[in-house]
Image (cartoon, rainbow, N blue to C red; front, side, top):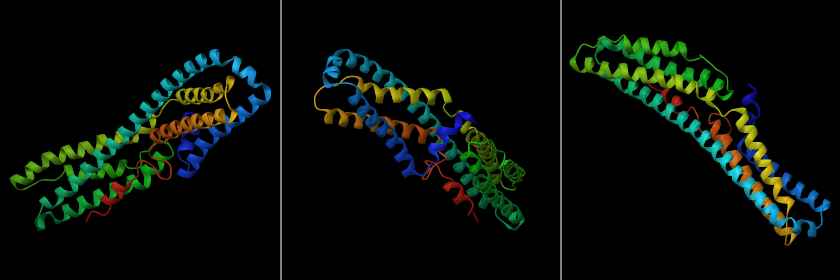
Length: 267
C-alpha cells in the first residue's frame, strides 16, 4: 500500500484542492528558491554562469521530458484500459438486458424476473461494494456472488424456439465478456505506476524547478516570471499523470459508476 499512498491520496482530493496543491507547491518552491538564490549570489555571479548553466539546464530539461512522457504514457494506458474495460462490461450487461424480452410468454415470466433481478443485483454490487474498494485501491471480491448468480440465471436458460436457442449462444458470449471485463476492472489498480516512477517524477520535477536559478541575466522580474511558468507546467504534468493513473478517485473522478447506476434501473 506504500506505493499507492501519497499519489493515491493526492489524486483523491477534491479537484480544486488537487489543482491548488499541484500548482501551488511548485510555484512556492520556484519563487522561494529564486528569492534564496538572489540573496546568496550577485547578478554578476549569475551572469558569469549563464553559458555553462544553460547547457546543464538543457540536459536536465531533456531528462524531465523523458520522465514526464514515461509517466503520462503509463498513466494514459491505465486510464484507457479502465475506460475500455468498463465500456465492455456495461455494454455486455446492456445486451443481456435487451435479450430478456426475447423469452416471452407466460412460461418464461419467472425467468424474465430472475434475469432482470440478476442484472440489477450485479450492477448494485459493483456500485455498492466494488467501487468503494476500487477508490481505496483495495482488492475486493464484493461482486463475486452477484456475478455467479447472473451467470447461473442466464446460462441455465432453456429456450423453446429457434430464435431463443440462437440467442442463447450470444448470451453465453455476453456473460463471458462480463466476467472477463469484471476481472480486468478489478485488477486496474494493481497496474498503477510503481512508487519508484513517482519518486523519479518528483525528483526530476524539483530539479527542473530548482536548476533554473543557478544562472541568470537580465531583469530579475523576468527570471521570476519564467520560473513561475515552468513551475505551472511541472504542476500541470503531475496533476494530469495522477488523475489518469487513478481514474476512479477524486471529485470529479474521470470514471464514475454512472453506467452501472443506469443498469440498476432495468425493469
